[in-house]
Amino acid sequence: MGISTAFRNSNSGLVATARWAELTAANIANANRQGYVRRTLSTESAPGGGVLVTGVTREVNSSLDRLFRSELAGVARQGVIASELDNYSFRLGDPADSLSIAGQFSNLYSGFGLLSNSPADTSLQNNVLASSLGLAKTLNDASNTLDQTLQSVTAGINNDVGLVNEHLNKIAQLNIQIGNEPQANNFKASLQDERALEIDALSVLVNINVRTSSDGKVGITTSQGTLLLDKGTAFNVSYDTSLGHLKVGNTEITPNKTGVRGFSQGQLAGWFDLKDDIIPQMKLQLDEFARVLVESFESADTSLSSGQAGFFTDQGAAYNPSQLEGLAGRLTVNAAVDPNRGGDIWRIRDGVGAAIEGPAGDSTQPLGFLAIFETAQSFDPQAGQGSTVEIADYLAGMIADQKLVQIDAQINAEELGGKAQVAQSARLGVQGVNLDSELQQLIVIEQNYAANAQVTQSIGQMLDALLAAI
Image 1 (cartoon, one colour):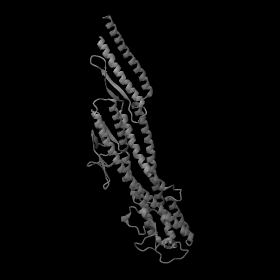
Image 2 (cartoon, helix red, strand yellow):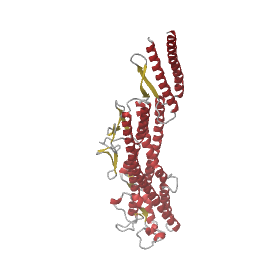
Image 3 (spheres, one colour):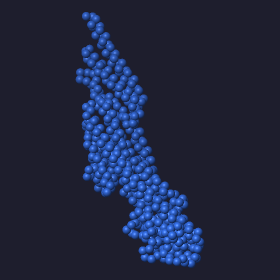
C-alpha cells in the first residue's frame, strides 16, 4: 500500500468517524423526543480504498408502525363512544335510585297499587301525580341529553374532518420537502420523523393504509382503498351534513357503510357509529316506552272520548302515530289532573275525561290503570326488547342495553389501549434510542478515531523523516 493510499484511507476513516460521532451524539440528545427515530450511518467502500459515507438511515419497522396505528384507530373509535355516552348513562341512573327513570316508574306502579286500595285518599292521589310528573321529567331529560349528544357528535365530525385535512396537507408538504432533499442526511431524517408523527395523528382519526415509494414519499388510502394522498397531492375530505355522508371529492367514504370503500376504525368512525346507529336506537327505545305509556293510559281510561288526550300526553295532545320521533322529549302529564295547572286531582281516580267528581270509594279506574303495569304491551321489535312484554321488563331491558353500550365501549377502549401500548413498546424497542448502546458506540468511535489518527500521524512522521533526509 502506498503512502497516498494509506493517507486517503485514514483521512476518509476520520471523516466517517466524525460523522458517526455526530450522529450518535444526536441520538443521545434526542432520546426522549417524541417521534424521534434512531439514526445510523450508511457507508460503503470508496473506489480506490477508504470508506465513503452514503447517508443517514432511520431504523424503522413498517410492520410495527402499521400495527401501532391500527390499535390507535381502534382505541379512538371506542373511546369517543364511551366518553360521549357517559353523561347520558349517568342520566339513566341506577335502577335502585328513586329519582331515575326506573325508580320513578316503580314509584308510579306502587302509587296506583296503593290508590286502588284507598281511592278516596287525596295524599295517595298526589303521590301518583308526583311520580308521574317525575317519570315524565326523567324521560324528557334523557331524550334531551341524547339530542345534545347528537349535536356534540355533529360538531365532532366537522372538527375531525378539518383535522384530517390538516394532517393530509401537512403530510403532502413534507413529502415534497423530503423529495427535494438529494441525500439521506440528518435533516431529511428529521422531516421523516415529523411526517411519521402526522401519520400517527391521522391514524387516530381514520384507520389508513400507508405505502412508501422508491423516492421516499408516502401515499395514503383509507383502510378499504380510497385514495387520500398521493405523494405531494392531498385529496381533501368533506362532510355532507344534509345527507350525512363523508366524501373525498365525489367518492363516498362514510364509515361502515355497505358498498363504500371507507373505513371502520378511528375517532371519525366512532362519531358515525353514534350518529347513525347508537343514538337513533336509543331514541327509538325511549320513544317506544313513551308511546306505550301514552297509548295504554288512553286505552285504559273509560272516561275519554275519541281523540281526547289521556293521563300521559304529547305536550297536551293525544298520541299521533306520525309523530313518534322525539315523543319521550315531549311527554307530559295531562294538566287536567294537576291542580297546579288548573286541573283536579280527583280525575286520577275518576278518569281524565270525567266531567264531575265520582264516588270517593270507587276504585274501578285506578284498577284499570294498575292493570297497565301488569299486562304485556305491544312494542316495536326494532326497539330490541321484544314485541310483547310488560312495561317494567321493557324498561329494565332498555336501561341495561343502553348502559351496556357505554360500558362495553369503555372496556374495549381500555383493552385496545393496552394492545397499543404493547405495540408502541415494541416499536420503540426497534426505532427508539437505547442510551447504553449509544454510549458503547461512543467507545468504539473513540477507538476508530484513535486508530485512524495514529495512521495519519505515522504518515506525517514518515514524510518528515524523508524530507529531513534530503
